[in-house]
Every structure is written in C-alpha cells, then in structure tokens.
Length: 240
Image 1 (cartoon, rainbow, N blue to C red):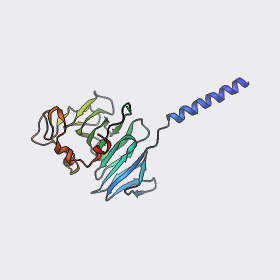
Image 2 (image 1 turned 180 degrees about the vertical axis):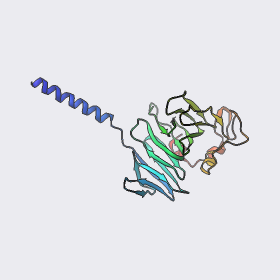
Image 3 (image 1 turned 90 degrees about the vertical axis):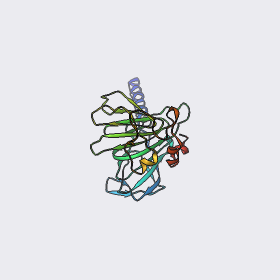
C-alpha cells in the first residue's frame, strides 16, 4: 500500500511538472507610440492604451480610424507598427506565434537573435503563417482573410494555414499573396519601400515586372539606401 501511494504521488508530481513546463510564457508588449487610438478589449468594453503602457499575451486590440500604434516585445527583438483600422491579438496559445492579425495591416521589424537562439517568431492571419529571422516586412489582411506579404529586408517563409501548398520564401524586394484555402502565390518584385508602405501605398510599382530587381535593390538583392532611410529605426535598434 505504501508503495502504491508513493507511486501515485510521484505520478502526480511528474504530471504537474510537465503541465507547468507546457504552459505558454506570458509576454509583455510595450506600447512605444500611439497616434489617436489603440483600444484594448477588456471583456467588458474597450480601454484606450497610451504610450508607456504594457499589453500582454492573449490581449485583443484594435486601432481606430486614422490611427497608428507601435508595440515592442523586447524579449523576441520584435517591433510591430500597426496601421489604422487593424484588429489583432497578442498570441500566447501557440508556440512561436507573437501576433495574430484578424484584419488590417502592419509592418513587422525583427532584429537578429543571439547566436544559437533558434526560437520561431511567427505572425499569423486567417489564411497564412509567416516565419522570420532578422527581417522587415509588411502584411495586409483583407476582410475575406486573404493576405499579402511585402518584404523589405531579409526573407519571410510563408505557407497557407491549411497546409495545402509548399512553403514559399519571399525575399527582400518581393511580394506574395495567400488566398484563403489556397497555396501562396509565386513571389514577384514590388518596388516599394517601408516608407511607401507606411504612407498607404501597398501595390507593386507599375514599372516593375516579373522577378527582376526593384528600385532601391542593389546587387544580390540587398536593400538600397532609399529603403533604409524610410525606416523609422526599428531594425537598427534590434540589430537587424
């Protein structure tokens, strides 16, 4: 009987330890800047957040009309510049996911993690999953869930949430789309800078075609000075 009781206690302790290690870590997202409205869903209405406040994993937020906000999660060297009329959730219930966009658009800036740190840093939409390492890109989600990805620096690996098609690598100067229930499109040159994106210009330049280099792209697909000057310091701060 003593052996049986001790066995039960050991089993319960093991399960408790496993459960604790399996519990997602709560992340804090610093509100770096707010123009007009950044609203937090409290479950009993909405509360406006101001610069200097902190949001946490699991929080659902939205930006108002003609609004903009910047959130930073320093632990993952990530910053998100949220455009107006965007609904999103600070994710916590799926390993590696930092943010889930329901509708709207944002620019994501990911710095380089320390050597040997291979944690996934994912952003999801109703139709796509985006994985990065030391990257800057814009993502826009339409009302129907269709997603477009515009990469300014680095490379983004994209796949559809249903796992229909192969994963696609979208490189600096390229743009791809993921329609709900379909595989990602073939990446094409976009000819846009991060500044263009922030000003609301999201479609590829009419002078750019196919897979050629875009303006501001040097040899080897590196970002030229035009794109770098348009950024607002996010990548530089994180060492991206």
